[in-house]
Every structure is written in structure tokens, then in C-alpha cells.
View 1 (spheres, one colour):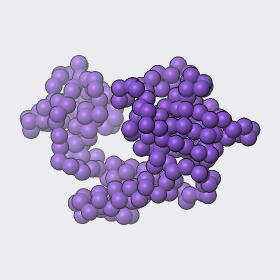
View 2 (tube, rainbow, N blue to C red):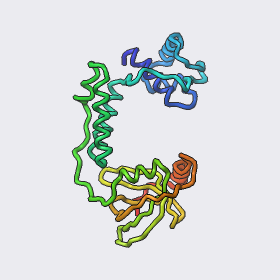
View 3 (cartoon, rainbow, N blue to C red):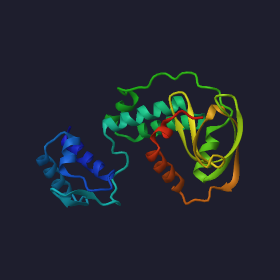
Length: 236
């Protein structure tokens, strides 16, 4: 790794961490010695990068520190390209188009020397397989999640049983060939997963879920941590 890339990566590692990062942790991720890390951090501080801390305790970077936009490494560009390819081939029309637009925008502004990592990327995704026909528009589900609004679902289980549920949507999850709407179900008084290809009808209600933004997601994450088997089981 070039020294300039290494300095940039140190900043990236510190930016993504909310706790002090030790020189040992930096050295392990960068595959260099701790002495090299100490020297690089000192150079960054000398360049007025707002890094605080010291050897043995760890380093933090000021949360308001910003860098020029799209200062991306080749690995980061290929990671974004790979993710966008997956989304473009396995999402609804709105997200698919958004993924392609993101790649086009990045390709238009990165330096010429980096453009080949997008247009001639060394990574790629498997061609998509036919997805189950769905009667709901995933963009409506995403809007309800963003706006914290309840949904009324008519749902058909794997056994063919139909039920009507009022749910609080948490997140729309994507697997290789299916999508899952993860919710708090008022009927079951608990978190439940619903395969979107089994949702017969969906109505977005005017009623809000009545929680502060992010609170339902945090509750689901805590539930998932304490119920790992339920959280990873197939949706019903």
C-alpha cells in the first residue's frame, strides 16, 4: 500500500470508530508495524488532521472532520461497484435505477486514473435468477419505514392460511431470491418476518408508530441479539 493510501486509510478507520483505536489495531488492519503507525499518525497530526490520543491508549478523530468528497481507494470503488451491481439486479425498479445512477455519478467525478476500477472492475455478481412475482411495490414499503407509518397487510402463509395484520415496519431485508419485511406485529405482540412475495395486499395507514425515530430499529436489534434463532429463522 502506498504511503498516501495508508494515511488516507488511517483517517477512514478512525472516522468509522466511536472509540479510541489503538496503534496495534491500526497496524493489524493496515498490515504494517506499530512503529509505522506511530510515524503516520504523527505526520497526520502535523498536517493539522484533528487526531487526539497517544500511543498505548488509542486515537480518536474529531467527529466534525471532513475530507474532500469521493477520495476513494481502488478497493472502495470496487466494493461500491459490486454492491451496486447486486442491488441493480435484485431490487425493485426504483432502487435498481438508483444503484446505476450512483455508479454513473461516481464514475463522472473520480480521477481518470481510478475510473477503470469502476468500468473494468475486477469483481462482479452472479447473473440474477427469476424472482417470485410480487403483488406489492417495495418502494411503498420503504416509504412507510422512512415515515414511521403503520401498515395493514393481508398475508398468506406457507401453508396457505390468510391473515390480516397491522404492523410497524422496521426494515426491508434482501436475500438472494426473496425479500423480507421485518416488523413489529400488533396481532402477535412481537417482531415477525413477512416474505414480500406472500403479501397479498398492503395499505399504508395514516397512523404513526408513535416512537422516536430510530427507537423501533433499536428495539429490533436488541431483540435480535437476545433471540438469535428466531431472528435468523425463515419468515412465516
